[in-house]
Length: 296
Image 1 (cartoon, rainbow, N blue to C red):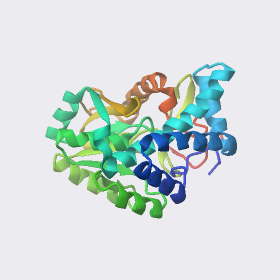
Image 2: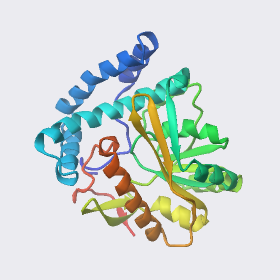
Image 3: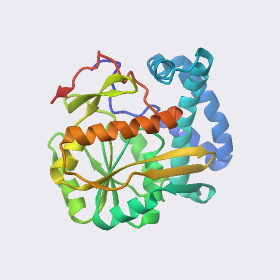
């Protein structure tokens, strides 16, 4: 696969996670934020593919000036790290230090009564949204690729003892579809991202921020086939230690996967325009060099 494409992995290593966890547990979250400034600067300078992709996004899609684009690249990295720190802090028992607001909470409460899909993107922090869903009293599953380093995952599972997320791993044998169907039959919620694909997956090209981009079709084919209720929802950082969760009204699938995807892309475009620094996309989303996509 081209270096411009997404490989299903989260940036950073086990040592980095351990340093931040040790820092906020011993010196406080504010100190961890301060350390994050140096780490973000490092990535701006020494992660050229990610920095170049972020720069292109702010310069050509958000149409920022050169100086604002440069500062936005740093801000993009910084906020990405901040959501990771917040996720681990909340999951390790510091949730009372954070505040939350909801727009469309009634839609999620109604979805919790019937079960269904929540489709989000790599914007803000859906891990934190999963924690917020505990207030709605429902069982939530997250459908995701298991490409994250197992040592990191094990360390986070041990540290984040108060954030219990049920993961349904996406597998080549399609066994995840059965698990998703079972969750829906139990009137539970399945969360998934709709803005990235991996090699060999079904895709569909649509205009996004003024230029055609490739999106995964699989999540929307699942919604269409199972005819399940669905919403689009996001959790974004509004100010320090304050997150806002928003949700669209519930819809029940009666259309094709392509039509649901079109609806999602239009909604996601609005979200990205409102929160451009929190779209954590560190590869060239519009590159013609992206390989490995199985077109429908």
